[in-house]
Amino acid sequence: MVAAVIYVDPQTIQPVLNGKWHRMDLTAVPQPGEAVTMLCGESGEAEFKLSGEGRNNRVHQQCEPCDDALRQRKGIPSRHDRIGRR
Image (tube, rainbow, N blue to C red; front, side, top):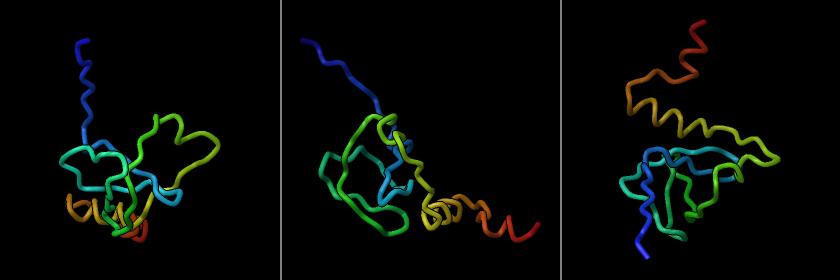
């Protein structure tokens, strides 16, 4: 049988840990069970599920420290700074 290659962009992976969406620096897709660390410093073991499974019966919140770290790296003002200026 010929391999069916499925390409995955590591930059689009959005891990959920403790009910929150996090951000990570990835240059490769982690292997199942591999330790991964989020931008906020929290870590866990990689586990993969279909995206629809993660949305069943729950709403995940965004991890604010991860969002702040990502915005800082990209030179984007933090959400708190923008909200405070209104």
